[in-house]
Amino acid sequence: MEELTFPSLGEQLEQDENLIPVPQNDQGVVDKKAADIAELSKKGYHFLKENKIKEANEAFNAILELEENNNYALVGLGDSERKQNHFKEAIEYYTRCLTHHFGNNYALFGLADCYKALNQYHKAIDIWERYLVHDDRNITVLTRVADAYRKIRDFKQSKQLYLRVLDMEENNAYALIGLGHLHYDFKEYRDALYYWTRMFELNEHDVDIRVLTSIGNCYRKLKLYDKGVYYFERALEVEPDNFYALFGLADCYRGMNQQFRSVEYWNKILEKDPNNKVILTRAGDSYRNTGDYETAITYYNKALDIEFDIYAVLGLALISIGQGKYDEAISSLTRLIQSDPKNYRFYIDLADCYMKTNRKTAAIETLESFQALGIRSQAVNEMLEKIHSNQY
Image (tube, rainbow, N blue to C red; front, side):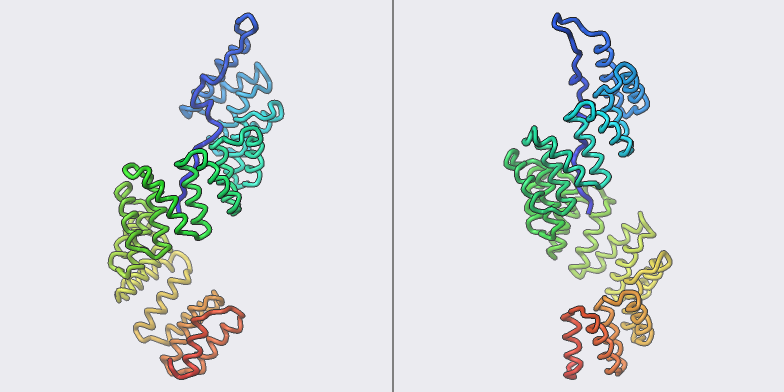
């Protein structure tokens, strides 16, 4: 699922170069060197805002020639590297700034963002919490720390921080979005739906497409497929080729047993991404469920031409069963069990084939071999019981 992300931090100077002061002495006389540094700083951040990286770096390096460890220049060079996703290089500049200007907010923000981008969430949290010691009501930082705690799956800390933000700002978009992701990550789909629906209601006529697909995914996970369809269709009105909306619609129609509609959306994805193995297999499943075995076989084989896929082989085995070709199915299912011995479904389908060919002992041995793995499966136990009692 595509996530909504937080805006870049540490770029406030870039947005407003007027934040950079021009120092004066007690008599109000401008210091020439300081004035030159301030002017170069404004130019540098202006260039950054326009993504003119080369010109920005020239301005910042010119400052360092005037003042070796100038904080504006070091932060600017860090921001420049971060814009290019050169996070390790950016970290060096931010760290150098903090060595000489301890507690510089812009360097702290940039440094934390770099660690976050490198998936080093614990380090990012440490940096952001250094800032919160001095300003524990900074909503932007609080949402970022909450987001980082979510990434390391610390549900309690993450939720507490998001809720603190909502206490300060009732409809803060990033806290609502974060709480939606948090509950979704922990499979609490109804709670996730609550927060994302609030986002939808706040911006119903100009809602972000990712909010629409997130709400749709919650309904999909709750198996309320008809409700999910509405939001995925709204998303397609915004972006007709959006992968998440097309996937969501295809899966919702699959769940509603409208395979002919499901196929329509799987194929729309394949128009853009014809070698998507997962989608080829899903489309094959839909064609198989409509009884169009020939087309299903074509899709499964396309998937297998790309790479071995368990579910494509399973689909072909199920077609063999549907066609009464039980020996072919038995051969395929036996190979699947060798590839994935813990998947109970393969044992059930294989036992079913043995029963259909009057090989009751082989069916029992197949199911007992799964039980011997020490994995519990109600479906396997029930089938074995029915076979033993001659009710299968």
